[in-house]
Image (cartoon, rainbow, N blue to C red):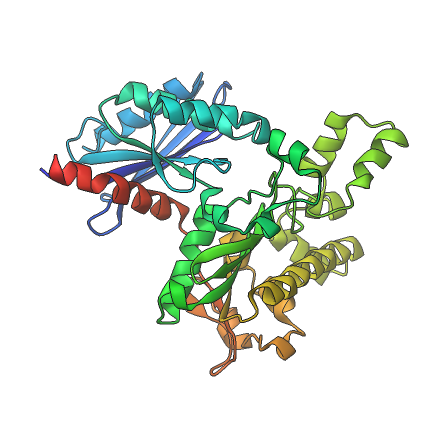
Length: 405
């Protein structure tokens, strides 16, 4: 039997998201989430899409090893177990691949060592990713395990876009450069946007706006990323749910010297108590909209700062690309908040960018244009699918192996 299934694992510090897909037709067979790992209130929610049934487990799940074993048990109940001969590979989301990993990679000891070496530039993410990989390898040591890196899509950035203007010797020694993140989403959405326009990715220049609680923009020329808003870490760039995005680096020195804040306190401030949440106490865009409708000025200012930064990046990436064929909105806010899309594009008619009110108001559905008929630059809503991207890249890499051997 030719193995065509891929299990996608996204291991966080206290959670595991998973999806099982059949790559013959990219059909989802099962999806689930284990959350609050290491706590007494752990929860596993599992859905078998073939039957439409959903099951939940509540109670302590001590660690990732226990969590993945529980996932394997739930899959087995639906006849989709990890021991199935139809399982071709396990694909892992890995946040940081540095400059070493530019493509999806079959995991071996050398790959594990390099992911571990990158922990200092991704201390919140890479350790959890590694834990998930090692646990999965222990459960199925005979099965190909593939790492798909958030940073890989951005490794095509030219040096003049990836370098910071600091001493290169120091930068190289400590791996200080702009890596970018959300790469699986930017890759998927840029290709899906080209398909929406009826063109090959190589023919299209796209600005992708991934707007969720974390947010990033990318400039994609002919299918290759040439600039992106996140940098050494996911803190740089757009205003986000709880992250500040761009700010004068001297703010950090000022808060340390004048306010007496420690480095850890400043880190927490900029990553967890800034952005929309820091500005108005909410990071849910629906709540911010409700508050604005009621005349709340703090919510209004937070929204205006958010939109101002977004417009700056659209304009900057228009300049970087020279010619833009489409601007694509994706992720939770990008796909669902019509008022954000309208505000971000408003006033950019001189760049050929417009939003059609009726098209923009349509909710749900697949990839669609929201610009007027005949617009010079297409404006699109393109739902992202990072799990499908990971599964597809994993299967591309290992599919021939299973077919030939």
